[in-house]
Length: 257
Image (cartoon, rainbow, N blue to C red; front, side, top):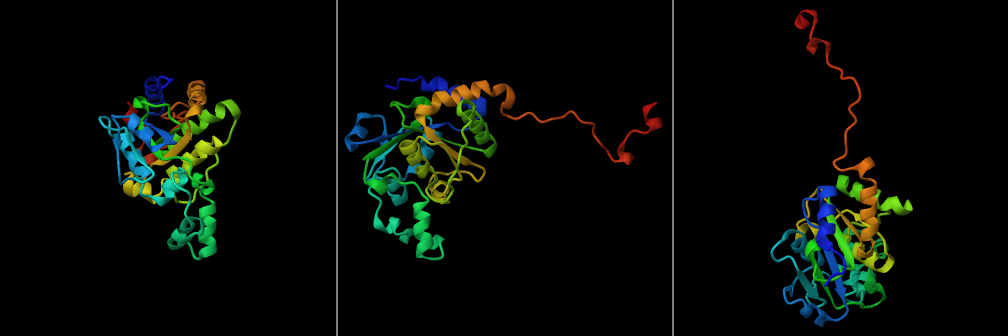
């Protein structure tokens, strides 16, 4: 069972950010058989990571879902998560040709994504669940939200280290590249959800995705609590100025008698 009180942390985080959907806890497993340890999980045989994320953040009754390498049908997502070794048609840029003017640009686009599979297969499956209901210790946390809410998290993460959140946006594999960076480099990612997120993850036009290592949750919450006075969400408008109205609309002398 998880070591942290993820339910309490989720409730506090959702309250501070007024988050409409639930954060997602993500676990990568070395052996596909580990997926069977979670008998309550829906193990899908034809899915994508962004589809699993949609289930986890929206399905309160049945949100624990997972897939093996074989069940993960998105080659970008599977390579990012290290569920497969990155195939040559990805590393050579062939699959990026619809989005680029030539092979060189397609190859460079691939290089600007972050894929654990570039160094070989590392994992055999993935589990995702609403963070408050995780039956495992998550490796990564992902959250979909408005840019204004994402700003609140950026401020909170800056509290302890003054660290900048640097986004590498390619328009491809946004969630999965973020997971890869979190696992491999301990980085925080804020990114525009990709087309797969929108087609299979039901992500809305106004949402961005924030992905970070679960090991940094205490750092985030400390930052949230200690910056609440200066940067609480919703942000307070500044109203200490005099209003101006067209003279014809202002009360006149006789109106005030």
